[in-house]
Length: 92
Image (cartoon, rainbow, N blue to C red; front, side, top):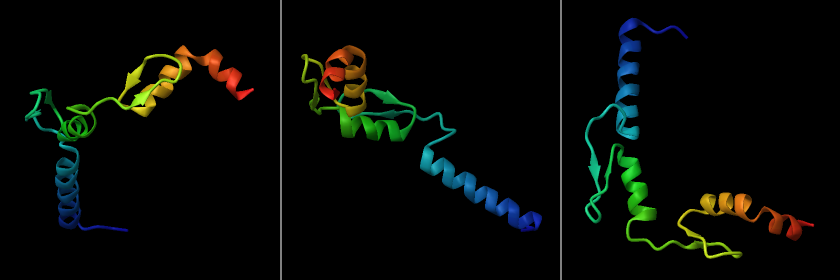
């Protein structure tokens, strides 16, 4: 598909604007949590912090020890690195 120069420039401008709005890229503004005052460079990281971390109790617990985390992927990594032998016996 062939674009005229003006049309292509408009498309690129729209893409860059939407990228910046969606990703908070290329900004020097910091995003602060109003509860704990942690600071983040990207708004999406602040939203993740507010949803999963700030004021939220850890809910993923290890069945083999007292390890507790907020994230399932952290628990999986913990199980694989700390309790590999126990997991291998369960699978067999």
